[in-house]
Image (cartoon, rainbow, N blue to C red; front, side, top):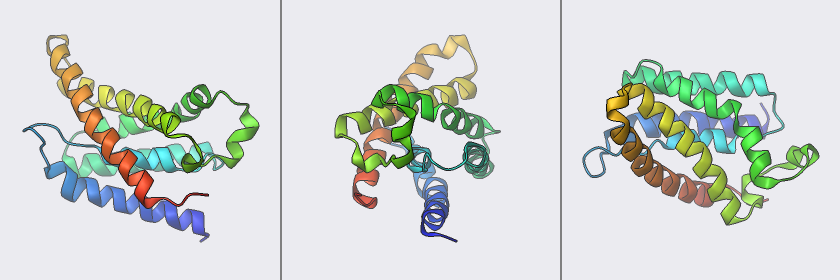
Length: 168
């Protein structure tokens, strides 16, 4: 097992346990749960095969769903953002496809990192809360939960990425 695969496996298991055993029990202001496990999608290497990435993203989401008893909501949401990660990355970076082979989140400017993380986080959280509430009558709750939870998730994810990843 090479170093990149080992790092991704440790990150996968670490974020799964962090989310399930700690963050799912943290309720900021009574109802905000940061969903930091999606940082795995931000940090997964772009040059790996897309099918493996989508399968692993689904497995991470379904594992969160299993422990949270949330019926597949997280699996769908994380697989969705994993599928659209590269087009969003291309839109944020505005470069040709050749530059993505050497992609590393730590090599980007802070503004681009925050924009990339924010877009994927808001999409993920909107899907999660839309499927949880599943009613147009709850649109205000969906939007407020998405925005508030996204703010805390973005802050924690950005700090974690900044502190725990190596600069190359």
